[in-house]
Image (cartoon, rainbow, N blue to C red; front, side, top):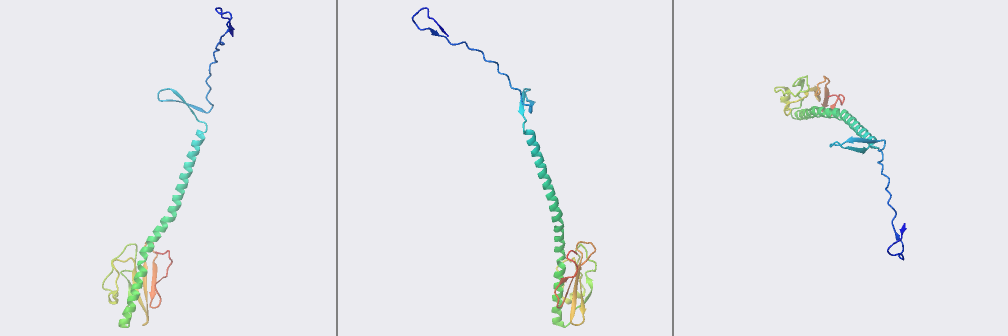
Length: 203
């Protein structure tokens, strides 16, 4: 837009800028349908867009629960396997006394025969015929004293020696370290090393 300058007719017309038009008021956009409105601590309203948050949170929770279930199942399986094995290992360690003592008695009989040309017979199980879970004191004054054999301290098993004619003998040892009433049995002779005559799971 231009206007004439009245003071200077020969001057070029003055250009006037066009009027400024007011812009249309900015309208606030409406929140998305899945937005969550919450109140702040000061009472002001805030908005948190929850698009995808709900599904992600549920996924994390379900994933954590799945991991927890797997861990619990693993612990259960591990316990079901490890605990019985640990108990069996303890029983085997306690039962190991018996074959060791049977070996010792056999060696003592062979040595006695070499010295006196005879074997010592111990007809009754010593220290008694009813072994159990508890250790018992070894009794003095038996034919084992004549043989010159005795255990180191208390025993869990019971032992005896039977002669087989003039040229052989059998050493027997029994135990019941788990107290179930089923005895594990070991034996040895002059020519046969100590062997277990009951099942490996009998303690």
